[in-house]
Image (cartoon, rainbow, N blue to C red; front, top):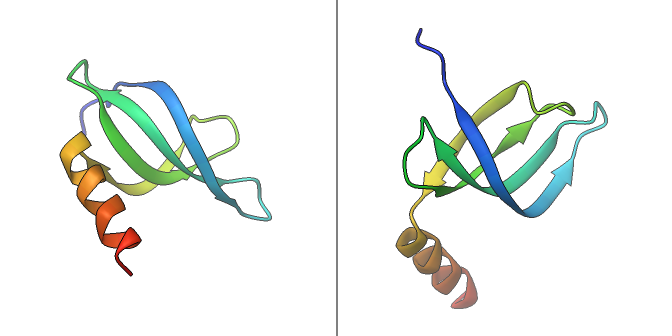
Length: 71
């Protein structure tokens, strides 16, 4: 598996924290030098390990926000 490079440009929100210190976060991340996307996933305390997550464009994030507001 190729190395995955990422840069967390902004932490938007910490959504939860597990007893082991992992946090579920919404971040703005640049993956492999590409344009940044919003990202929701679990992170180890040192940010060196991560769980599976989902990435969203700004438009997708706006659509999600609207869908949640309409509930």
